Structure formats: structure tokens, C-alpha cells
Image 1 (tube, rainbow, N blue to C red):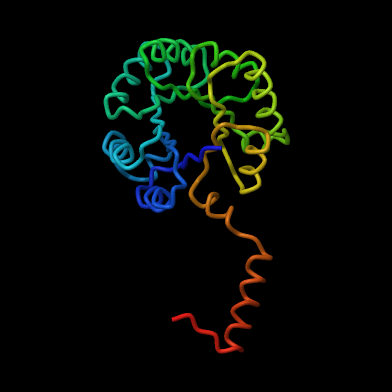
Image 2 (image 1 turned 120 degrees about the vertical axis):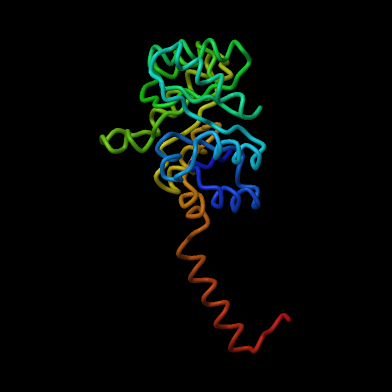
Length: 217
């Protein structure tokens, strides 16, 4: 499973990228606002750092305006994936932009029917929002499984990009189901390395090493 980092913070992306943990980046207007920087400027800097897809989201809601914004965003770098919402106008924009050879990430997906429409419209990525479904006492992983089954049934090339990831468990569950990509905040990716037994074992090793006077250098 590929890891995308869901942030616009340059330092956080750079740290994970140096470890080989970044296959792409997802941004949105909210994340750009938190960074306090110009959307085109920060997106260009991310694209220069990361070789994989960088999702940059349109802010228009009407198809023609989305298409115009998508083309503008795609000029930033070759690895831009234009992010459009899963609305009827968003699907229209997806079709035009994908037919032009541009990567398109269709976001805010909450049903298998929506995911099927996005694949038919030529989406490169479909972004089902796991955490937001969990907030409504619905199992977001069930949606990932449904989309995986449908896409496999018909050989759709659209990649399932599990989004709204809230925990390290979300990452492993999405991987087991077969999501192609998971996008998560840097903190969630770092949490994947943590385990109470690892901490306990390390504490014991260090205690024993100190007692034995063991030094490596």
C-alpha cells in the first residue's frame, strides 16, 4: 500500500520523505490555510520535493470553473493530481481533465455508487472518507471493501485512496482490505511505529545493558 501524507507542512513532509515513507501528498484548502501560505507557492514546493502525485484541490463548484482551476493547478508540476469533489459537476470536470491526460483525485466519497461513477468518469484516485463515516457510527472500512470488490469485478484502473484516516489501526485495516493508497497526517504515520511491548522491551534491554556495563563505542 502506498502512503500519501495529508498535510501542507513542508518540514513534516520532508522528514517522512527522507525515510522513504512518502509516495505522494494530499492537500486541501483547509490544510493550505493552516500552513498560512499561498496555495500555488506551497504546492509547487511540495511537488519539487516529492516525486509522487500531489493532490491540489479546486475551490469552484461549477464544472467549467473546476476545469479552468484544474488546468491552472496542473501547470504547477507534472505530478499534480487535480482534486475535485464527488458532485455531478465534479464528475463532469473529472471526465474532461482525465481525458486531457491529467491525474484526477475525486474526493469526499461516501458510497460505493459514488465510487463507481468516479471510475466511469476516469478518476485516477477515489477518496472514500473513513473517519467521517465512523463519526456517524458507520464502518468506513466496509465502504473500502465494497469499492475494492466492485473495482476488481470490472477491472477499473481507479486507485482506492483511503482518506480521513484517524488512527494507526485505520492504516492496517485499509491495507488488509486492499486499498491502493492511504493518506494520513504525519502524526498517524509515526504512530504506526509505536507499541507498548516495544517500549517495555527496550526499557529492559537498556537496563540490562547498563547493569552489564555494555558499551558499543
